[in-house]
Amino acid sequence: MSDESPAVRPGTVLVADESLYLQLSQDPANVHLLDDTSAMVVPYRGRPELNAASVSEVRGLLESTGRLVPNTLLIRSPYDVDDYETAEDAIEAFSVAKYHSFANVSRLLGAKEVRFVEARVDVEQTDWQARVAAFIPAASGEVEATREVVKKIEDRLSGRLQFTGAAPDSDAALDYLRRSYLSRDPVLRSLVDMRSGGNLITNYEFTLSAIRESTASFKSTLQLASAGPVKALEIGARFSMMAHSVRDVDIKTEVIF
Image (cartoon, rainbow, N blue to C red; front, top):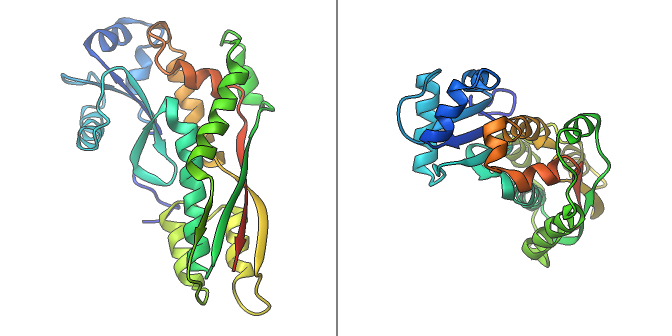
């Protein structure tokens, strides 16, 4: 499997209990959401109104991984098409996953040490975030929430990873990038290039863009979270507050070969 032809999975899933699913199916303004296969509404129980086969398959996947919880908003991992994370934890979880993917690529390229330096949240809004923000009330806890994101990432990444060191295996690194849907990341591809051929790089300090692969899924997640009945239940409220302002998470790191 490669990132050029990933398995067909919705980027966002709303697991709706019977009451919420009924509200969505009977609301003329939101019934179209039941026909969306990229931001999918999955009934916790019962037969889906539309796209029955696809919805049932996704429901089975979520049940097998312990993610089938009523009134939960989930976002697909950009690095594993069968793995979903709750929207509230997605920014931190995907940032940590991206860092560990980078560390594994570095290992395959012969690294002796990968060191986490710091995490920073870029709060400059993109155009689409500005448009979404117009429909989300300003939250006094927004600044504190972004600080919480940084703290959670730093708690999980503080310290360093050490390896024995080895000759670089560029083919293995490229294969790993393909399997992790990261072959288009310019920083990681450049790292592979600089560990191939002659005059190899021995020390690399840079800033990793941690969630840029998740932007499309974040957009569809916000659309679901802002749907009338979903918004009223405050499903994904914390995610909505942060996602309309957090442009990216920058992870400063260093690798020594």
